[in-house]
Length: 465
Image (cartoon, rainbow, N blue to C red):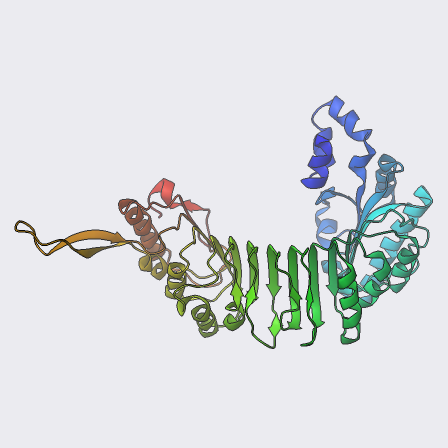
């Protein structure tokens, strides 16, 4: 059981276990369930040049030669396998290259058929650059009766017709629209569904598929135009991923906990209340759309604010700076690859009254961010009851602390393209850490990484450079 967790859940190599001792090596070699994950791939140009190769990738044993595949199948025995077919993007530069790579992979599939007679698949993933891998009838002799997971990001009608004849009920499916329609009778117990490049003519079919998928908990939609009339309710849905979707808001999902949106082209704005949502990832430039969300339980917001400085500023103003009580108030805020002014970011943090952790990556940071967050001493005046020995008012100095709940800051500028004034930045960061300590609101962690160099811990080291 420990071995299986190490290889399947943690996606680690079996070979690590075999190097511990002889007993572990024997146990690993005599446990076929450890060797079910096989990746058929091609040797990249870099690996050919450097004469290096990866033995394991994400828990899958990598095979690009027939003799490697034969040894892997011997360890597998008769257990159903998890097959991942992958082509290297760097190797596919011309049509002739594609034909050679395709021939190599089809050859490996034939080796698998000869060795296992009727290979049984538990999961199948085909990941080909540009969707150019033509599998044709290469899977005619495979057994799909115990198939549970299918991920094919390209059109493969012959393969899907074969699967439709053999398979029972799938648990996870990701495919293009036309191929999914051929499996619509096999999706009554589907738990994870990915819809790729559905055309307008397939929208009604998609609607019927979703209506009959009562166990669906995760849904991904990519490249689809949904009309104003399309509305449905899915109470079981927990995860939703929308990518390049033209829609109003396609699905009423009150129990949604995780939402990912990558450029969503919206045609109408309306209030979207997701009371159970704890994770929101948004990539786009429309603050008006983001402002529609009411997510009171949100824990993590991952934001990639596209566009120029003016667009980003307008978006953030619409969501946070024009509302005294913003509806998006995360505990953890991750800002990635955004062209945002540091003073604007500081104002956003002040509006996020629940924010405890801030992570910034591939985004320019200047000393203005830290200077705008410095605590200040302010005079507070309070009235007291009149008496012979007391004044009508008493003054007292108190600390005003912007983003008071902030405990963790991590800024990674290693991939930033903008020029940085590290000296001013380091000085401002050190001042912020020191003054927060003086104001009895210390930061627990404060890390910065410049373009050239390692991480600097301002809380532990006290000062930067």
